[in-house]
Each structure stands twice: as C-alpha cells, then as structure tokens.
Length: 257
Image (cartoon, rainbow, N blue to C red):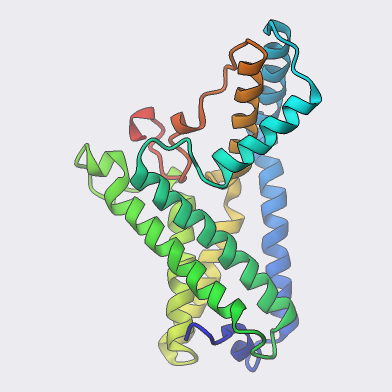
C-alpha cells in the first residue's frame, strides 16, 4: 500500500487531464481564497500600518541586514520548528500535521503531473501515504486530547464551530485518502474516493471561511514582532502563541490556547 501510486491505478478509470485539472483548480482556489481573505479581513492593511507605526515609535534604526537576519531566525524558529508553542505536546502535534500536510500535497502534485500513468519512484507514494498518516496522527491527537476546551474545560470533542472547518476538512481529506488507497477500486473504495475528492474541495475551497490563510499570515506577524522589538517599539500584533487559530480550531477566545 505505502509504495503503490493510487493515482496511476486511478488513471485506468479517470482521464489524467481531469485529475490534473482538479489539482490546478485547487491551487487556484488557494490563491484566490487567500487574497480574498486578506482583502476582506484587511489583515494586510493592518499589518503594514502597524509596521509603519512601530518604525516611527522605535528608538533604534533597524537596517536591511538585520531584517534579513531576523527573517532567517523567524523561518528557523516560528516556521520550521514552531518554537513559539509552550506546550511540547502541542508543538509536536503541530509539526506532525504541518510537515505531513506539506509532504502530502507535494507528493500529490508530483504523482498527478509526473507519474499519473506509471508507478514511478516509490519515494512519492511513500511520501504521500506517510504525509497523510502524519496529518492524521497530529490532527486527531490535537482534536481529541490537546484542545483546551476539551482537555481542560471538559467540553465534548464533537462540538464543532465554523473555526473548525480547516482542521476537520484536512483530517477528512487525509483519512479518506488512506482509506481509498487501502480499499482500491472496490465499491467502498470508490465511495471513499468520492468523499476524498469532496473533502479536498472543501479544504482548498473554503479558505475565506476557515483558518487556512492564517498559515501565510503567521510568519509575517512573527517577523513584524521581531523587527518592532529590535527597533525599541512594541507591535500591536500578538505573539504567534497567543493566536488560538493556529490549528484552525479555536472557538474565538484566547482561553482555547
């Protein structure tokens, strides 16, 4: 299963052009949805206005070299290792989900566009399966055991709000991908495939209503905070760890963190 390319097997029933078009449409939905989210919520405008205010209020001059250095630090700390999380469990769950999602998406694109009619190198189906499995482990761990409203406040893990759209659609897409790959072209396998396509469409098409776009804003906010502190000012943007939406499943209150 882990070394089998499910899209190559699928090409016997669905035209390769259809699969490739679907992936392109999903990518376009991410781009358009993110732009809409930024414009609608005015997050970019607020970010740049806060950047200008912090520069005028700052007591130190921050040069371009310093900004580049802080950008590298932000990439290594907040992005690649998620060091802003105080909880080790939450940090591990986040990293499993993040790196699993990246591997899952990259492997999907490679197999669909490069090896849609042949098995190809086994590294890609392995990355696809392992990535989906990592998403499931990190996501379900977070959903059932780490969320504050579940772990500390005793609320039901089945209580759902709009803010949960991203993490739930991501979990659905990853879980159904594994089920479809396992069952193949059986009747239940085709059902799993249909639900996999639907959940993936929801995942990438619901950006204006989910927390998907936050993954793009979070590094910028972290860099802005570093620059503001280096300039001797204080940014109005909260620290990344104070954002309950990181996994896209907050109820809108900081106590969820």
